[in-house]
Image (tube, rainbow, N blue to C red; front, side):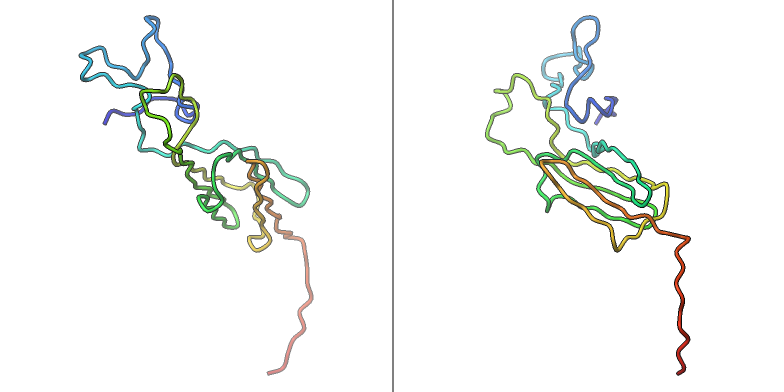
Length: 154
């Protein structure tokens, strides 16, 4: 299979670039038998999930649009310094391929690994979904927090 040279946005949305002759970059000039339609072009790579990341004084917030993804199709793993989001958006096949006029929605697997700017408290992390928006709330570890330990006699 030829290397997929589309940009992230093109893979995510399914759009293609046109050259000056009005041909798609994914189509071949040889015979019809060898021509590759942009609709049929499949990539074996996962699309990269788009995110917004910001912080407050005590939390790191990650937001991402995951509309059309069932919660059971999401896998979110976190460590103290990294978050990885994997998922799959599955298309309901009720329309035949040849009946499509435009196909811009992304269907398939996606993933994103994010190196966090500060360590987080993994046990207190929270993930919520609201109207297709995934929100990860990751409390920062307070490295200045002190506690007194009592010594027990054994």
